[in-house]
Length: 124
Image (cartoon, rainbow, N blue to C red; front, side, top):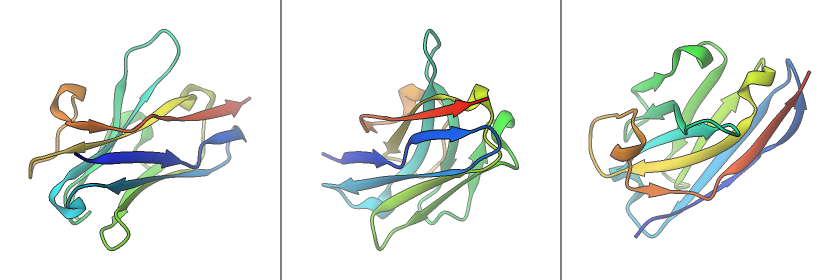
């Protein structure tokens, strides 16, 4: 079993930045595709970004391209999401997820393990 713990959420003004972290334990971290998802009130959980085992391949949803960056440090068993130029529409609970496969995926059903989420609030 893999345990994922997110941190780094908080309150930020529009245009500001936050860096989310997700620490993994209980598995071999480098074997997992890692993803970030988010869920706003009243909406379904949606894909934000993902990276392969090395971090060398990344995928982003269109709305965050050029603003968000996913990265990972396999030595620290941690994946990050750097969020710049935040907008009010980015406000949501952000979840880290791990997928036991080699290829990146963008659907929630394709991920095996989830963290508890961290709240990101963006004030306008």
